[in-house]
Length: 320
Image (tube, rainbow, N blue to C red; front, side):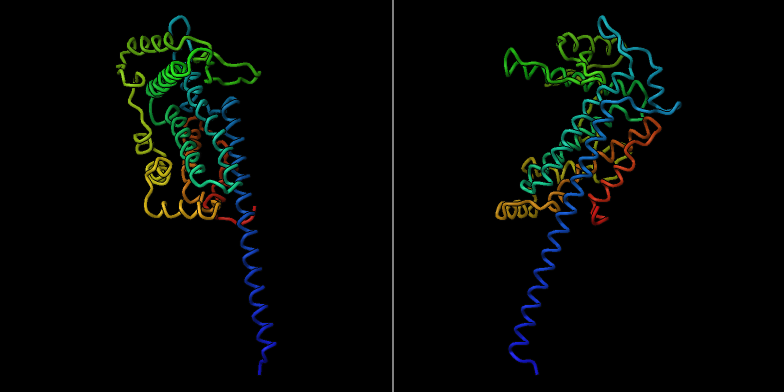
């Protein structure tokens, strides 16, 4: 028969085993969190390089065809069409890179569910805009209409910002070139009102209708909702990333997400697995952009980095 001493030792051993399992589970969760954050950092670095360095493209790719298009005459200057397309995509590629770095920080901190969800939505939106202007399924002229529409939006936003903040505000819309110089061909240190007028004159000269909207003129209708539903390489989750999970950042909390938000406040932490669950935009945006970039240039970019990031994001492998 088993005595009281034996039973006590058995209970103690069982309790120690449970504690050991909990500690191992916590350690494994932290290792996966850190591996995912490292993969996100790697993607951020890759996006930064895509924004700052020339793209490699195949001879018969849409990107190469864009390089053959006539220059776009805007007032007293002419810009290659391919340069405009790349620049308007790069603005958003670098924005996505910056937000990916922020997402990695929030993953490691495990301190804010809503902060991470909001940043993931920003990643998705930036990638969607970057995708729209290099979409290989449309013509060079259609891509150019999208790019110039985005430029009109940027220039108008700069005017509104300066009007709100007053004089002395410098234009934050800058890209640093490979030599470390500020690129000012696309709006920086220029007269945005004149640039807007030049774009409108060019568009009308091409026979493209220009519509006056509340915030900015547009040559072709563009919206996040339309793009997330109609881009060819979307697989369905993009709409979810924008309208459902990521919409938490805008107060549209479903009952279950509201419960998780409450729980994260009570615990004072937001576990990385919970952040990942509600931050699908951080995965869907880069997936969509890199697939589109491959179609546009004819070359796969960040293939190894993306595969590692995707596996860790969907928890398809354990320790890195």
